[in-house]
Length: 257
Image (cartoon, rainbow, N blue to C red):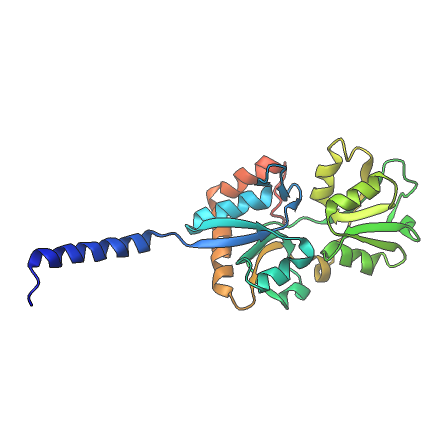
């Protein structure tokens, strides 16, 4: 049986419409973040994710012409969750370290800031040497915990699931000092909650522990996605979008050396 030409034309138009719709459907990338590490990423009371990591992630996704969807995950389980395909990438201030490179691949860095030690304002601790025999807090499964374990071996290391918890203990006198990113500590110290305390000193970076900056983690072998993020990082650095986001949070360039 012959099919009338008008039906063939209609079928062709329908097929082209379906193809166009499929081509226009935007790729979605699911991003895992912690949501408990201000000013980089934080989950507000209304469920909104805010912070430098979140704004950078949105800018990268816009540059890559993909849709971003965020998932929050406790820090201790964030790499296993990536490996289990609960999300496609981690954007959560994760330092690029040799140890992590055995488990995941990374984009190039999108910022790099040093660690520091904070103590109460009335603390008798005046130098790193004074930390001997004192308790030092850090968030577990972080480069800062590893740093304290290696370089403050004469101190008692106390580990916390989140940064908020060690801050409460430092404020309450239940720990003598804490180690974290200098930006995280400085932002907290500028608030009423952090008025109890001060930066004792920045710490000399140990590249084997602190890594070469924070990057975007993807599953091992998914280098194409990591490279796309790297290219997008370079693009937003060049077009001014990175500087715009940076200025929203900091008065210096956190990209670092």
